[in-house]
Length: 111
Image (cartoon, rainbow, N blue to C red):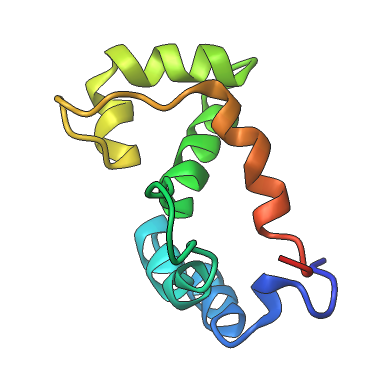
């Protein structure tokens, strides 16, 4: 259950739950959450890694039982299937494994 006031309880959360129950794909669900994600981006500084890509990577980690973020980054680095699912082009660098440490705080209600 998601806490009241959490970012996922905002406007698009109901749509996401409806899509999930109706058998929507991860792309449909992440597209419905896009307005919430857009509000989390910094207005200045270096570009952020889109949260959609980080969530897709974590989904791969869970589905394929990858033990750590470091191993996940290695898998994404050499697996075309993983790159395609996450949304990385062949010439894009894979992120540092420490990128995942900032993901939970970005979704906390105070941020």
